[in-house]
Amino acid sequence: MSQDVNYAIKLAHACAPYNLKWIEECLPPQQYEGYRELKRSAPAGMMVTSGEHHGTLQSFRTLSETGIDIMQPDVGWCGGLTTLVEIAAIAKARGQLVVPHGSSVYSHHAVITFTNTPFSEF
Image (tube, rainbow, N blue to C red; front, side, top):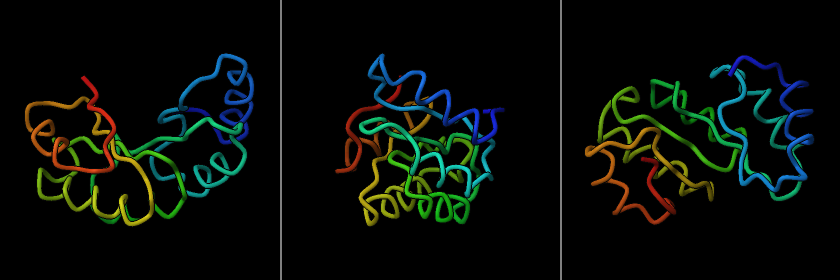
């Protein structure tokens, strides 16, 4: 999470030969333009994900506008279950996935109802 965007892009390309599914939380949370640039510059097929350190619904709205592939809200930090459901709806409207960070019993119940959650982090 402490890299700058140039380093994150270089890291993504250095990891490309290993066919990583995604690069996660590699920039500070509010570097929205950095996430937008990382998404544009990431190797084809490598998804960009963030969100575990975002704590408001508005921050997830802004994050969704960067075009990242997966949002990872933490149900304990994002405002609770109701906010998690709202974040999933925002992501779904933009064609983004949601994989809650450090899923717990609280988010597992929500995850099974989301159509844009391919699995649950455990």
